[in-house]
Length: 98
Length: 371
Image 1 (cartoon, rainbow over the protein chains, first blue to last red):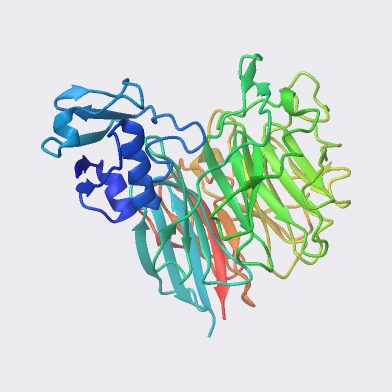
Image 2: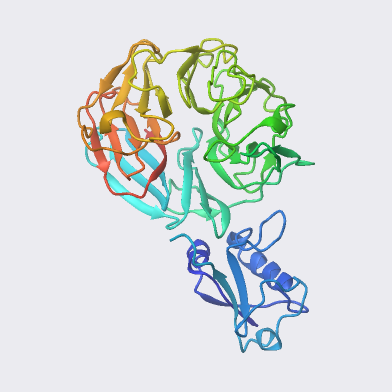
């Protein structure tokens, strides 16, 4: 199971805790993780990736093992520690807006 | 006894204000979707418990929320607004071509008879429709594909489709308005469209009487007379007696004919309301005095309504979707301000009382009159 940490407004939107456990079939990548997240929690569809372009929303970043992985290819494997559930996959909202 | 429910969209969430028909004691419920910009909340005329809300955040994009129990509980429904076919370009602020990009939903207009059917006016300007309660959305692309589409330019707030009027006597007729393209009409259920801007004059555009390019801020109609339209334009208050074929100015003795909302009394089709704003660069009431203006003659002759409204040091604005009326015998008028007040008049505008004073900036007001 992969640990996913969500920004607070998405927890409110979907009625979730900050951290959730997610089963991802096959190779764990950003794409398969987000596909599983949206399938399991439909309220989150379109909020992390644009629903039409499927691109990460520009005010969100992805972190894993202390590293910004936002610009990794969507199908690149996630770090082993994230795939194994020892480190979380963090979805972070930008501190923007004043 | 009837109940009035006021659906308030604000910069940081939605609020539901409820009162009995006396409209003196109010309960305040909210914020719903706290932290999200709620551009509009609308109730279905066919099922008052069916509500739709447009919530947007710069971080998370657009979400459409639906309630089937009058706003007690909500569920996110579909938020995929995909333009049909080749999206093409419209004109950007600097005059260069700019690809059509979906940004947000400004206005939701539920169908009069089918609670699962709802229209959405979006930025960049397009009209969408859902027939399954908001789960999926299809563009009525004939509007955006009008030959004038590539020449549409955004107003300061974006290229937004902000007004949708469904003709209650003709299910095939729809009016929309876009800033800053103008008013458009379809007579075939949204398939094809044509501009209906003849008579508008905008001195701040290259061709003041152009077919499109006018910054229409809001349209209003009375349901008993759908051929009569009222318009608050960027500057000028206008009227059409032929379903938009031609317009004439009715600004008359208003202290300023700039403004955003316009509303029609529920039972007097010739009684209309506007909130004059000083200018396009000074978005507050003239002289710092908040006044609603009422015309009982369908325009031209206006009276200031001030009783209960601040008459000094008031520098708020009232946005285009932030005024509405109820349908009780003594018609109630409601508006919200950018400083978070929601005012009610239970006597057609003669006296005003604040329902709430300290909400986030109010983006929209929609009123449901419940049996």
